[in-house]
Length: 330
Image 1 (cartoon, one colour):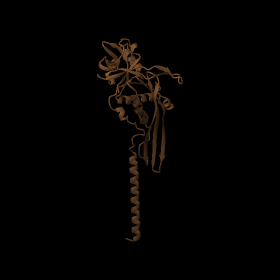
Image 2: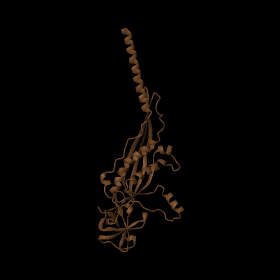
Image 3: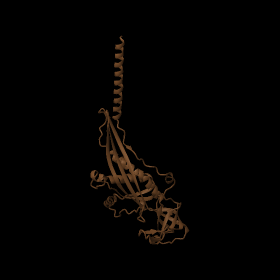
Image 4: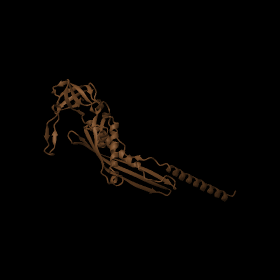
């Protein structure tokens, strides 16, 4: 074969191999784009510290007073008859995270009217009056989305990003004071690519709204939970009857027979001249009670305790014990 003809044949083969490799690369890219990755959550929730998760914990009674959406995004696009669907979703997410710890008794507040109405239909005259130790008040202060796109020679990419910011306040019911406030944020995104027209269409990804709200609350919930667990568990003396002190607290809260509770007399109340608010001074330990038994059912259960140290009045009038409170012995 002539040398010129041989060179032409080799050149043609090289071109065919190059085109084959190029086509294979493009098709591989297109096929991989046809399988869009799941949405990615940027911020993950930190774990509760080991010091708070170990050992026995007496359960605090917590209620989420409200969770409102203060953003224009929610009012413009996510409006239902109650005008706060995103706020209700945030309330449900936070409620689940508190319950999942197993360290709190969560009291219903958002749908309390519906529960009392149901009790009325059942012919029950009593309404729920179980008071919480702490109230959680929440707001969604930022919530939005943005779309970004990139166009290449053979590929197109669209990225949908959602972001949210949540603020929570923790209120001590006894004093009405805000004892803790924190802000958390989250971000989630999804990407879709197409090559040579192959690949999924970049439709609106509504799941990002759920994921980013969960991320923002998750980043915040662990701090709120640890702060709640850091507050002392308290109970109160209701009366003295048949040789025992009747005190608030139940097995559902983690209280057990044989537990010893410190008795404190409430500190004196003084007014802070800088704020004009009343401040209660620290209480003084005056004795100890030991839990001997329980009586009552469900949320109406109380403990019966005996005095093992100190000197306390013995009266059946609850007003007699208004100046005392109980705390778990550390």
